[in-house]
Length: 204
Image (cartoon, rainbow, N blue to C red; front, side, top):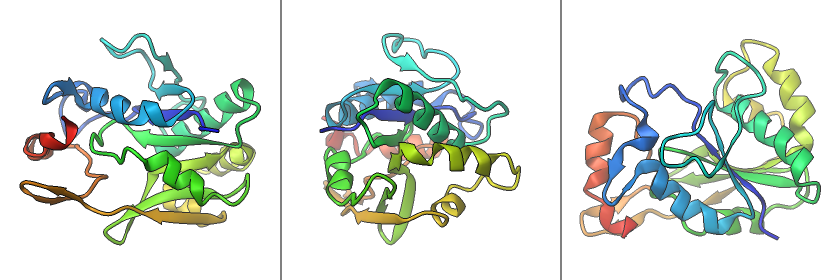
């Protein structure tokens, strides 16, 4: 059974100077590409953001349960709480950020295939790097994560991973006409948006 999914879109986009999720990239916005690739892989799709984005009002939006923009872990906690109420049969939910338009079309099936039990976190890797915002998150860890976030020093997602059993799935680089591309390439700056535009063949 496919898990539900959550797109993490609660950041400030401070390095971009505009909402990076809504910037154009080829024939869609950056967020539009993320949705197109992630939606077929999950049973339900919501967006972690304070308010609906123009053009995407038909999606469910989940504002952080905790105030203060505490980073991606706050979005993960929000997903855990929401899906524990709405999807009692789900042990995990899948996450992906709003700024990575090239994410693998088999991301969730690959993560799900190695998930051994309801309390193990599964995250993606590529090029010898972990990408923890691309993961399968156990709903059962909500209480621990909420307690963890009460300490203002606990904002780093990798530090939380180190507290729990975590397995990884490695994804290969994408072959393009312009060379190899990390499938988890994310767009934070105008320069990265320009770079991403040279690889839109993958998004066609």
